[in-house]
Image (cartoon, rainbow, N blue to C red):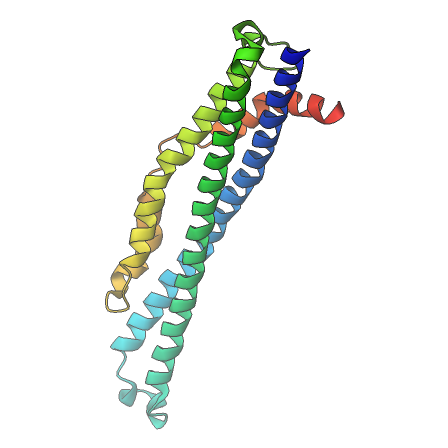
Length: 209
């Protein structure tokens, strides 16, 4: 009875952990997607501001509006700052996703360690066509944790790109989308989704019980 209760507690912890991972991965994917139009907009604004700086307005029909150039530059600069602020918020979301996921994985392992002796090695290794073994699922959680840990370096690289942005270096801002995408995503992007697929039957069985 003690073994069964211990195994149930670990299964519940695993279920909750994979639920959190799915929620956080959805947030991760959507946040990265939302960054793309912001980067494109920022690049376009920088291009417009650079063109505005080059134009000699007194030689154009707009010379009748002496403050027009300053007003345009101010408007473009403000729009760039708004986009940068939004990108900063997206970076904060990515950081929270990583922290939330890693914390949940750590809690799951703590639960297992509390009950490991009671469960025993044989039960930990048992698997069925519908339910992976506890050992399998713990290994997959470690893979997910490594996934987010590896992406932390890329997160810092992207954050540094944003911090280096200056309105005095407009060409640099124009190439920001390319610089952003060049921060390679070498680890398998489908790792988390594949892991969730592996535990889908386990999750459905847990929810139906």
